[in-house]
Image 1 (spheres, helix red, strand yellow):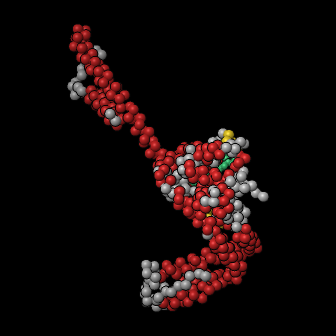
Image 2 (cartoon, rainbow, N blue to C red):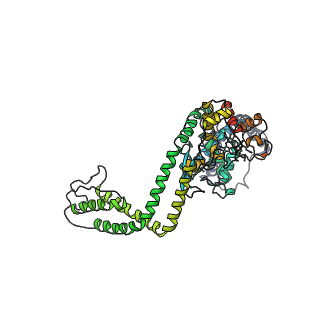
Image 3 (tube, helix red, strand yellow):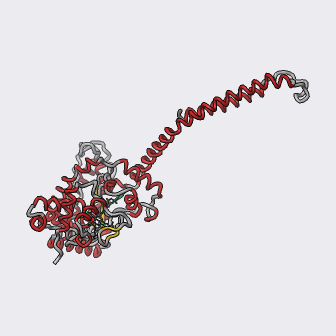
Amino acid sequence: MSSSLFITLIALGIIGGLAFFVSAGFRGSGKAKDIAPNLSKYRNDDELETKTLDRTLTVAVLLASLLTIMIPLYYLGEQNRQQEFVVEFDEVSVERGEHLYEEFGCGNCHGVDGSGGAASYVEKRSGISVTWEAPAINNVFFRYDDDEVRYWLIYGRANSPMPAWGLEGGGPMNDGQLDDLIEYMHHFQIPQNEELATIDANINSSLLRLETSELLVENEIARQKELIQSVKDSPTKLPVVQKAVEDVSALLSKEGGIDTDEDGLSDSVEVDISTYSANINEILGTSILNLDPDNEESIPGRKDKSVANGFLSQLESELINITIISEGYDKFLNEAETGLAFLEKALEEKLWEVSFDEIADSTFEGDIEKAKRAVGLFNAYCARCHTAGYSAGVAYTKEIASGGLGPALRAGRVNIQFKQREDFIDFIIKGSVNGKAYGVNGVGGGKMPGFGAVLPQSDIELIIDYLRGMEPDA
Ligand code: HEC
Ligand code: HEC
């Protein structure tokens, strides 16, 4: 029996009772009452002890039997009802969690479906604003348990774009909200077979990144040079853009004149503003307008008037930009040049490079494919925490396994921590547990994920043999 039926029955009972009392009040109200009830004669003892008593007792027995039936019936439904409550509670919690995920913009960095994304961040060594990779979290419970995920949510990840979300970490969410968020994150996890199916693609993209590293840094250097040039140009551009904002505003507020296409801009304004945009394009790089006085939508689907207004807004925001840059000219130029020097040094040193030949020879009996897969796996699954700068992009990457959020692993360091290969494998499968010892000197912080549910043991062994085989630095 559902609780709503039960409530309906009780409600009916209450209404019935009220109706009884009200009707009792009206009963007999029409008759004249000469004698007050306390003075009038009532039923005698015989009558009271037989008929009336019998009737009352019968009603009592009937009601008691009804209760005897109702209570077990209610009890029988109890377990179901409780389960329904749990399900209902979970659903509401997931809904609230989804709301938090949207409200706090997790999706902006991790993707709306949690499949990973990126965030803009100022890289600490170079001072350059970079695109920092944000990991997928639609698979996060394969590597962390609830408490570990909660830790990252509460405290965020300092030295990265991931903010602290819990009150204890200085963020906005209380415990209940974190519960809801975690509940929701469970809700959008992908199945394990889907996670395992991404391994090869992950390896390939990390290997591709190695192949194209030089090109990526060269592109970044070119961008940085453009930035420097635009800082240098700002003093000459400033008066031009100031005048352009004035001139274009004046043109747009001009009234009267023939307006063939009747779009609110006179023919002469359409021609003048187009010529003007072409003239300043060379200096400012702003858009060129081609407004046709005979056509109210010179660009199909966009009214000429709104195109012209958009042009003015473009000039206005350019003015704000250039004003800020020219006011802080020395600071901006200095920062941009330091950044360029950093990138040029990175291109020269190429610290991201690895030699598959050497790795194959020293560790995998000359098997280049194994060497490649081992490096690809390490970069795809470990580098974001164990190689400095990896998430910021290739130009910021120090030597592979140089240490980041997690300790340095290169140069055979792992052999100091793990005497036995088996212990090492076990650690990578399970990850660290907060406060629990690992290896020879390690104490886990719960921050090293477990990879047992993400990678097959053969791949884990490849990574481990690669790390164990690294020569100590000279
Ligand atoms: C401004 C971007 C940004 C926002 C917003 C953001 N994150 Fe993150 N988050 C990151 C980055 C970047 C990392 C990885 C940091 C690193 O490189 O070590 C991360 C890491 C994490 C991790 C750890 C995953 C792992 O395997 O290391 C979890 C869990 C997480 N975020 C969940 C969330 C949730 C839930 C929200 C919303 C409440 C959120 N994040 C909002 C950028 C963001
Ligand atoms: C989300 C970040 C993160 C990722 C990804 C990660 N680790 Fe770690 N790792 C850590 C942290 C942090 C520690 C330190 C222990 C702790 O705090 O739990 C650690 C510890 C270790 C240690 C012990 C080092 C020592 O000297 O004590 C080894 C070995 C290791 N990780 C290997 C790996 C390998 C191999 C991978 C990839 C399969 C990997 N880690 C992926 C964060 C990470």
